[in-house]
Image 1 (cartoon, each protein chain N blue to C red):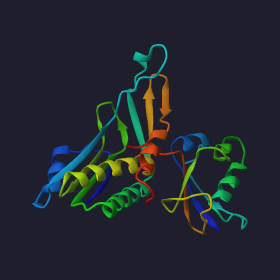
Image 2: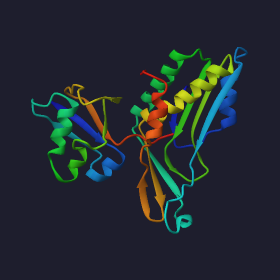
Image 3: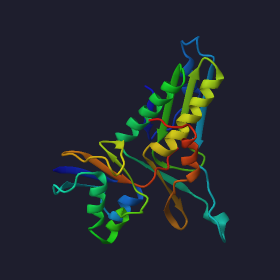
Image 4: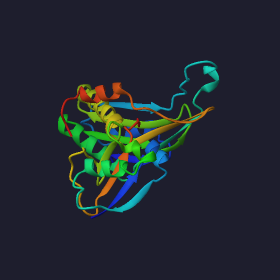
Length: 158
Length: 84
């Protein structure tokens, strides 16, 4: 199993270990973990307006397909020995894990690069949407141009 | 031609619909045609109008305005994604 979309939390240590189990050819594992951040709003009383929770909506079916396609694209660009992507949905509070990407390779170069590539593509291609709960009500998170730029730096692809 | 249309996130809330089944006139050939057709409903549906930042998928793959729409397709409209 390479891709999971789930409500439940995941065990970073266990997922990382699983990438190397029985694989003496693995020389490097690079991993990324994304967390819910307690963003502050701008303006007066900013400190009291921190995000108290967020809800992640997704497109069941397309989400899994798009993550599989991103992993396949990474595997076509680098020689990889294992990939694991987990993305959560549902209600999450600050400090909770949202996403895990783990990449195993022979050497650190391809592991680092493929891990960053998968995150950059996931940010702009996987159908997830965040809605933040604030004391002033729900607020859909806007897409960031910086995320598009990060994905575009990898050039043409899937 | 009969298709299923899905709406997600802020667009779903604005429109008040998560999905609908539509029978389309023969004049609609592409995703862009479908989007204009829906926007012409007026009111909240103008959220799908030209210039609005809306993305789309056909049968669960991202697709542009020139992509062809076929009978029994699953079409989705949604805002730019914000996962990760």
